[in-house]
Image (cartoon, one colour):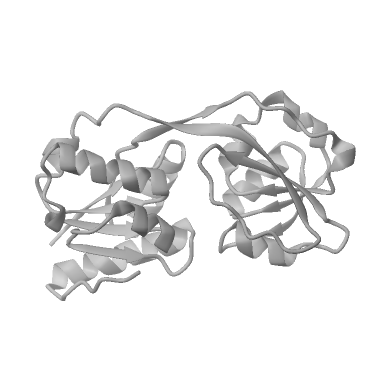
Length: 238
């Protein structure tokens, strides 16, 4: 069975995920449920910050002119795309992670005790180590888009849906219920267990990627599509 793989994350991330999925032979289609917009924010004086903590490239795309205040400062980036965006605005990326911001806190240099986290309005709270101070500034927000025109039609057939955030998970579940889409016809792959939890129950299968990044999520999607095509049972997974 060839399943359509629906990518719900905002652009430009949706297009990047679709391109990567198609190179793997997946029938990927972008169906963003949100748009990312910058929001007004108050910068923290440079002298009060040792380094920046970055969990998304959106923070760099939407941060605006105030980012120039931190030109040349050290930064910890959650992934390769975020690191690229940080370098593009003149930050000195000293560490790039693969497993989320919480893991990045374990890679801090001793001299970096005061961090500025540039984040989205909807974000994951961190368990901050003793001796570390994190000042957070929300610089962007994900705003819901109207229901995609082809959503109801596409969802009348079995599909595999990729969930990159808890907000997308919750909104997708609501849209399915509002349009009377049977959850037991939908396979769901989430980027992390916390995202899977927001999707709720009743799906044909609901599984989480081994690592909270796009590469791991696409690997899971490919595995699930292969299993669906072979008729093998799709085990539930947290």
